[in-house]
Image (cartoon, rainbow, N blue to C red; front, side, top):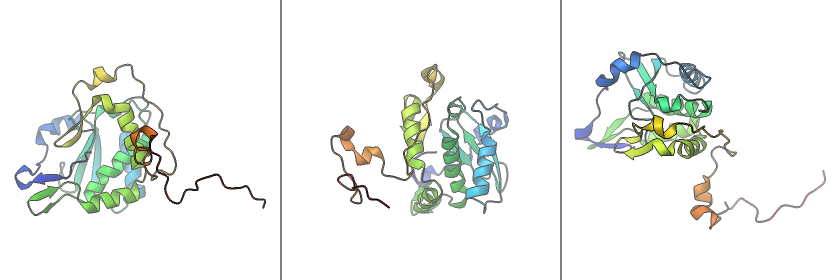
Length: 213
């Protein structure tokens, strides 16, 4: 799960064969919900066209989450979640959003565009936003609660190796998004910490008078 979308032709990613043994080690969920169940429910509701087999694992492999397509054979995929998400207090809404992101890779797969390999082509982001308007709220929670152990690299967002020490004793904040989920992010609406308030044109500049029915 990363924001980077471009790779040169010489950097085309291959199957993560070095990580395959880790994908078979069972890990008990610490969140109060089952990761596999969440992915299965997301697929049934938002991706009914997917008939492939999708397995879920908890893997400390760097990214917050990733999908290995066809790793277990043709049309058999593995979605891996980093154990930083397998902690009490992780909101199920976040895992549901990540599942939507990774499943979108199956129906909107990476493709070549000239000399560039697009891991997230434009049609990918279009489909993700259709099924996951809560993306702003989920990313806000992620950066607010996990920023101390995240870093941006060439391959997108990853978790540092010292995440356990950095997160020790820190309880995640509750997931309390504003409504609607797809509203303008606060950082855009109020840049510079609120010094400049930019109201959308549809907002009234003062409270409306009460009217009787």
